[in-house]
Image (cartoon, rainbow, N blue to C red; front, side, top):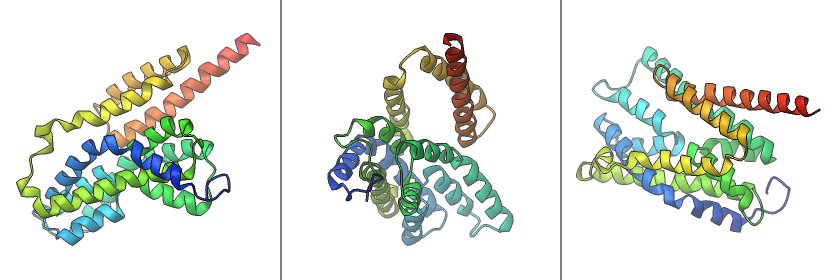
Amino acid sequence: MTGQGRGFDWGAFGRGFRVMVPLWAGVVPFAVAYAMTARAGGLSVWETCLMSVTVFAGASQFAAAGQFVGGGVPGVAAALTLVGTTFVLNARHVLYGLSLSRQLPLSPLQRAVAAQFLTDEAYGMVLVAGPRDPGGLSVGFLLGAELSLFAAWNAATLLGALAGAALPDPDALGVGVIFPLAFLGLLVPLLVGRVAVLVALVSGLGAWGLGRVLPGGLVVLLIGVGGALLGALISTRRAEVRA
């Protein structure tokens, strides 16, 4: 079912799946790197792949895999630290969920499924490309985009777990630039009007400054809330002046 109560749109699912394919080039190397880290920490191929299937959060998986390196299963204190780190790294997803809920009505089951597979890249692409889809933004398009990266991430995890030692270092390939460029490309079409440009500039400078002292996930959350409040404040003031 879609958010509008119609039958599930498999055409929209396919279009959402395909729109993410160009980003696979950025996903695959880092899934391989995660798998190599997990295997080096003593996890089996099965355990390495199971984490990708159930967690599906790159930075959190790297943090978890790092806990096993040279130390076996982490103790209670280490486990609590890992939980806290994971929370901070993924706090930005609260904003993603709130944003999507305003644009796409979902049932409780749809909301739970979409939340499990939501990523930065899927959110950004769905936000921009979803409304342009022939049927508009739909749950089919959303799940297609989400599961596209899920499939690529897990296939690459298996590859890395089985043959990681024979594969090149992702950093040496320079693939780290793919995601920043992709998000920049998604941002530009949204910069319509002076308010949007001003909020983007202030948010970018704020993120650069906070990123020097705070974890990335927390920076995104703070800047997301702050940028939204700034945009609302400016828009409200302009409306009052016009009135």
